[in-house]
Image 1 (cartoon, helix red, strand yellow):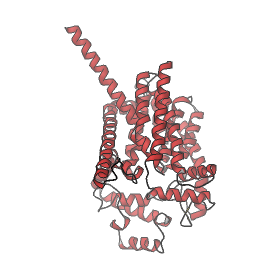
Image 2 (cartoon, rainbow, N blue to C red):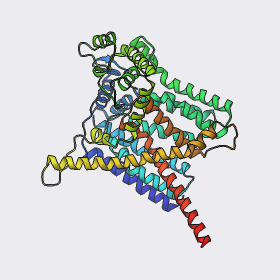
Image 3 (tube, rainbow, N blue to C red):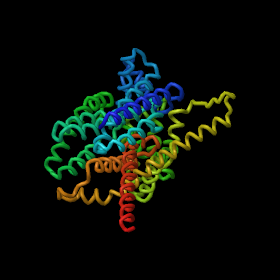
Image 4 (tube, rainbow, N blue to C red):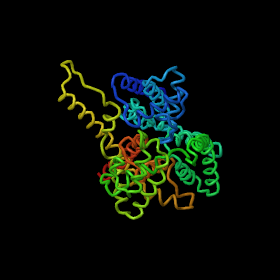
Length: 450
């Protein structure tokens, strides 16, 4: 990489930093729903009340983000809600820099591709806007980038497996579905060496390191709730609100609108008396999950439809999550006062432009998976070492497939696409590169024929 390329990378880094800082300073937003809960739990930790909600122990979601924000509160000396944005900016800048090293490995030191990918990452709307949101997205992407770097830069072996396991443990405490990530690591290791014993040993080592990180929280949960809860207890709730007869869009719906047996409804009502919320009702996880699975087993066609609707809603439903969560308190002022009509037009304009970006990149990711599906699957199930997929294509393929499977199986929202865009960026550049190479080849053939 020459000095000119490094200089451009530095300029893009400064641009990315400036955009992130500008957004959190000048685009106001209110922290709603789960984001307000994260702020409350982090504040409770800071004030010595532990990971609690309304005075009660809570493990509704993974504690990773709340503890990270609480640590930042301790460093700053207060629990000012704006600390969430400051922490996000720091993590987002770190992730931006880390992405450069990921692209260097993925694009094999092709400076043009690296600069394009890094430039897109620096100005990508989601990576900028979510600095404003007191949620898991920015922290999780930071940890995911750490996993990618560990896989790309640490030599193959148990050391790599241990470090990936430790990072994965932190990621699972942030997003519990990452408990399944060792399957992704197994696929990557298998594709590189086709050695079943070595791959299995590395995967076991990684799982052990991951569980080592998670264990203190699991022990805390047992002491707090007198039952085994590995990380969180919202699985049953998520299953039943996303998989039931009344769900027609594959999206979240209120629990009281979900059809369920009268005995279960009475149990829910009894648990939620005296202002107690579903986020505190750990005892409902099992019965809600049992009812959801009972319905899912008997309705496979509807379950498949809802799963595909969740994928569509997450990856091909625009980007109204940005206006809902990252700029919901913003008004456009053009020097003539605030006009409701002009303000709504501007908001819809931004939402539309963000949607075009999100949908284009998601489409490129889908096309990338379809183009590489046969080569990846055939190579994966072949024991022939010569049947392989290059490491970059393999990593991107399995990660996109993993995140799509998670959305299909559990819950779909636009913001769940956030960590996948880094893979979609690679997919776009890869597809354009292949098309460019094909066009140049056709030009040479026509020139020769002429």
